[in-house]
Structure formats: structure tokens, C-alpha cells
Image (cartoon, rainbow, N blue to C red; front, side):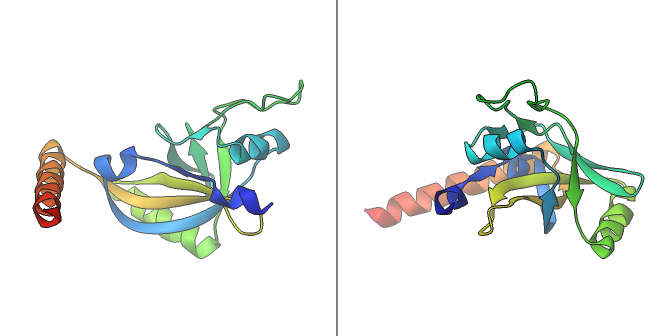
Length: 151
């Protein structure tokens, strides 16, 4: 079980497309073949986002590949999965999402020390094109500085 703790599937688009304002760690309701696929590192968060349905939070668009040794009991790869948070956290997030421009995105899928799959979600605001250009300029200048310091 200790070798599974190094599973950390990241949403690489999250920092590029959004300003991250607040982070939460949520549990996920999974089936048996889904957790096995996650432990094999076969998941993708690129197109995933979170939405509320009847006061419950779900992640939609998270792709967990079908388990290779699964039988007819195998799961659907892109089904909606329920997230587990406290009532206070859910209410806070629901109030923020009602405001214009805010969304909830998954940032990291990982296995904790107890062997449970957890999803780090973030309250985020979308970046405009000019914000993305600023980030690119900033990254380039940082690289130039590091390059000159190594000499």
C-alpha cells in the first residue's frame, strides 16, 4: 500500500487558465474498478470541472480509464462522481459559485496515506488572454535570471 502514495495526477491547465483563490481537499465516491485504475495512474483531469446538483458537489468530465482486468462490472470512463466535503465548505463554495466569474476546478487527484483517493479542488476565476500573456512574460524573465545566475 505504501507504493500507491506517490500517485499525484495534476491538472496542468488549471494554473494556466485560472487564478486559484482557495483550495479544498475532497473525498470521492468511487467504484472498485475506478480506484484500481487511479492506483495505476490512469486518470485525466484536463477537461474536468465541478458543479452543484441538489446541494451536492459533483465532478464532471474527469476521465478514469476502464480497468484492464475489469469484467462486465467495469465503470464508465467519464461518469459524474460525487465529492465529499463538510456542509460548511459546501455552503461556502455554493455561495461563491453563484457570483459571476467563479468556478470550481479539480487541480490534483492523489492517494492519501490511508489509501483513499482524494481530489484537491480549487475555487478559481478564469484568466483573460492578456493575463496569460503576463504569466508567459513573467516565466520567461524568471528563466533568464536563473540562466544568468548559473553562469
